[in-house]
Length: 115
Image (cartoon, rainbow, N blue to C red; front, side):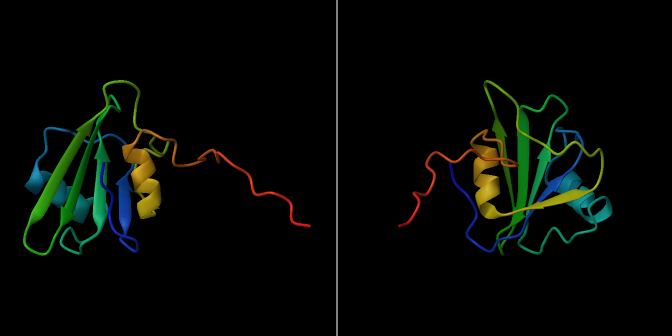
């Protein structure tokens, strides 16, 4: 999978989104519900009611890009809030896209004690 470059702002729309919405519907939701500018270059993520479908909307400088991903098993980890927006780092978004719990990632190796 791919991820945004470091320094990119990433926003999750809390709650469930109607996944029938396309470019215009999601851009309108970014403006009205999230109070953000869909043409700012930030990444906006939306999840469906079942939790297995994710849509990402981003402006690349020439046009809006809409990416969709459906998990065959499991659900995307999403905030419990029913409204509002949550900000993520690009690394957290990469974990989210892989189906990893981005809120509490498990480290595979601990640092060794010095000395």
